[in-house]
Length: 334
Image (cartoon, rainbow, N blue to C red; front, side, top):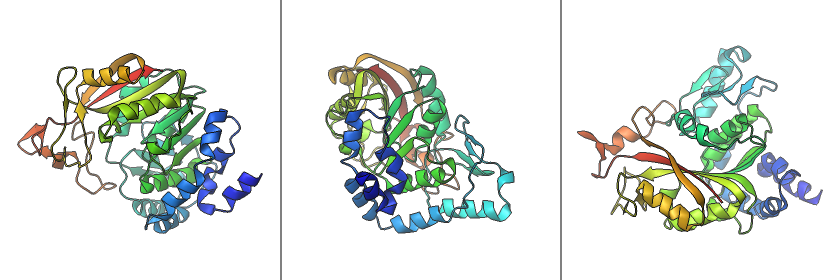
């Protein structure tokens, strides 16, 4: 009761109260969650746009008891008939205030929120290779706005906890939650550094699009392993290069205009690293070049996108002359 009063005394943490008080979580996860509220509050408050973004979420028209399809490729909430033209305009206006939208798509009351990434395409590549998510407690590291977390719930996951330090993505999750309700998906405004030692109870851990941003990839893999129960499954998606095992690219400057890419490994190198981190039954289940159809600027993400990161005369190279982005998916067990 004391903890519940503490959370409700801080309105910005109220959307997380059902997670903090969840009785269905293993004790190590509940113990870890109790250490997070002050970190989360500080992360939200120190961003200068937090109040503006929260106002946009609060201004969204509220429609309880709408039809929701978390299994749809364009994650669907409601239909065009649930709102009049003015209501749909208000939805679009307030969601645009949370620009840029990178992961999706979402279909919200007839508004097609066409995100930068066709995340549905990646989910189609990943989902067939997963152990069934039914009844599983899932950790999604670097989860963005929670698109994949909603899809995980749609696939039967019991509870999904996402971590992402980019506050606008957390606000996007809050916007979708306004209509999806208090379902067991929570996006926490924290990075992987917030993970505690000894959690080791998640059934499945996802890390998609994170590894190449870590200075120490082996340490990241050990963090993922340390969050899994014995026999639990890790799903790792990362940039790779077409090279032999043991090789990796260390960009001397930027990679595809990204300044925080530390290493892009060969698929065999990733498998080697995962084995060194203590994973077993490591396998690469998909390798797919990223195309300008899958990642592109839209009305919902108006900054530069993949076409601007590639050599205009040769899309097999980045503007810096590196191999163009290829992404691979690896699955293994603790």
